[in-house]
Length: 226
Image 1 (tube, rainbow, N blue to C red):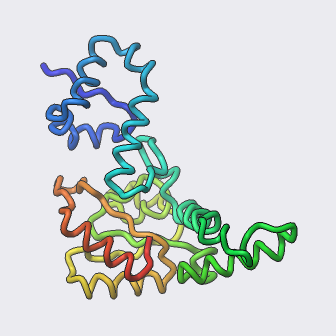
Image 2 (image 1 turned 180 degrees about the vertical axis):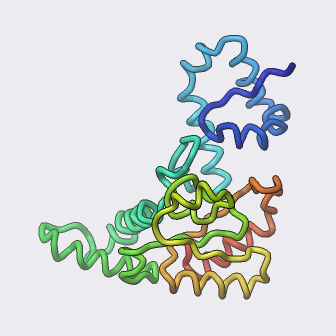
């Protein structure tokens, strides 16, 4: 009987099903896998190398964006309020703000903070609802999450009954470019601050094609969605 794949808390049992073939074909990953079964303790001492490699690969694929969480489940990080704060922080501490004389840090923290916040909200196209009641836009058919707002999108009733927070706005990624842009614009108007997708569907194992992913990115950029 074949030995199970090592579980490094990235995907847990769900991800092992989908990543097994990829693990076997990837030379670098396969080496880690083989070494793990020969000497687990040695691999664990080099765990930071694995995390760094994963993070670098993630950032390269997503054009500079870094993973928010490396946990098996993202419920702890994938909440609208957390993501909204991360987006606001990214904008408020960006060179665009820090190099602007009227927005640069000063001794008048209260006045300066309000001015910076107003600028950032205007830049993002957000209003008070995006800050106080942020919500996600979720692609139809998404697995969702075990807890929090995305649990509303789960197909498991025992998960749905423990969902909390604002329900995500469901969008169709199979729509045309113009239709998808309109759907995202409407979602943003309702307070959505980001789009959540499954790169690999947990329902049928289907992979989000590069073409659809690029179309989603273009529409998000056009409508200033995260």
